Length: 255
Image (spheres, rainbow, N blue to C red):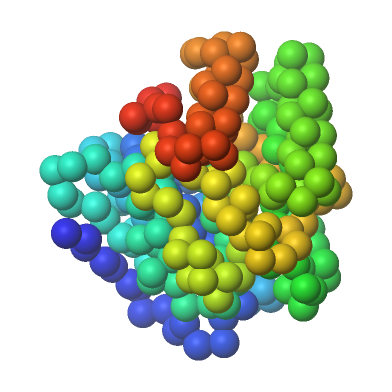
């Protein structure tokens, strides 16, 4: 069962639906929502903010009620993975372009972000786009910088090679294309972001831009280490690519 709340937001003539899947994100979600809920920014670019909650038990929902336009709450006893959360959010989207962001990211410059999407994606032939990811500047170390430099270059190479790759931290997709490929594969506990872009790339071009990037929390790398996280990503990616299933049965939440 899903509970859906909409705060009298007019969905007509929207350009973008921003979908944020969350689970107990009371610490980091406010920073992103404060960036996105700026009234002048919303009026300029015409978008809605959709929170798709997986069953939070902290203050995530009260925070979302103050700053989001729509909230979908998962109330079933079974756990909802992030693919399910993104799909439930997309089902309530009013705009023709879907912007998926994780709850633990921040935009470097919101106006710059939307301006780039307007100029280089909105009216282009690209079916989907993504960008570089870096660690929060105030927490970034040399190891963070080197790792993300290599990883972002790897993602860009895969897109240029025609395979398609985009991290779930930021994925921008035309709604018609999203529906055509039937959204994220909900059977995948990990690698669902790579899998989606791989399927979209079979239909047409995807854009990976190095001109734009967002910041993410380093909390997973700090707790598990870069080696462990990378090995997990690689194993799941190859399994999804070769067998269409992830090795991980559940993606550990790090808060």
